[in-house]
Length: 144
Image (cartoon, rainbow, N blue to C red; front, side, top):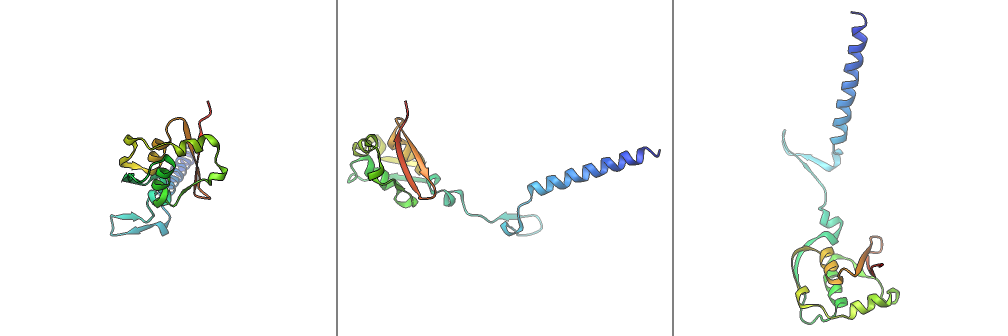
């Protein structure tokens, strides 16, 4: 009977530690949650779209006055707070892309992210790089 007590104590101690750890892992810091009543807690935080405007879901139609892909990219990026990389630092292949006409099929978008619109406008031959610090988008030809 004497050997059972230490084993039982060890078992209870290890169980209480794992229960405490699992409660800590699921706990949200107090400053980010609010109790509405005894059963409801809400998390106070900004939306993901506010933290990363490129994942904002929009519906848009590119106006007929916008002719080139570069203009269309600027139009889509305007409300996101991001801009295209300076043209003086852009390679020749990308400048050629910017001067191409926007295909008719790529003028209307419904419930897609800004990032998806950009990827559609540039096509599979190009890749989009995002500089979060400068809030710049650079487009480069995909390496073969």
